[in-house]
Image (cartoon, rainbow, N blue to C red; front, side):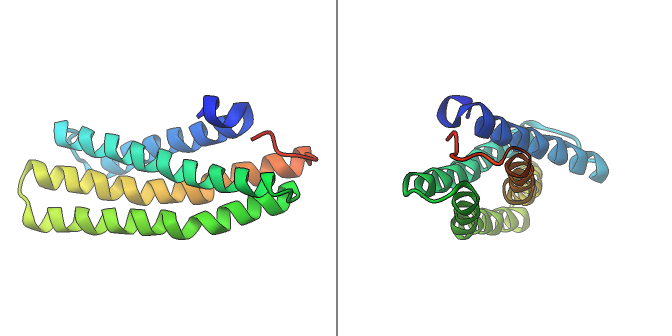
Length: 148
């Protein structure tokens, strides 16, 4: 993420991704789950989905900045326009996880539970946490252009 989006936005994406993993582990601990290989596979798939959400957001922001929009408008429009594709992809994956949970048994259910928790946390961290960090950075620095 640092290579694609630079130090500032790459760091925001990495913080959101780290927060996602911490929240998944916390939720699994709260449920008293044992982490198995299928559970680890669910976490890895979730990491991929979280990276995809951040890429969608920051590419939209980059597009808006290249169109000449001011930083506040570019960030606001980027987050707003990327919300629908993020929700679409994650809700579809959540439906697949719920289906796997009810159809599968044992390890498949563990994968489904980890995936479902990860998808919920991924949407939260990409849409809420990353946006909060971006807004805080924007409010403090008030840049004339975006370093993205």
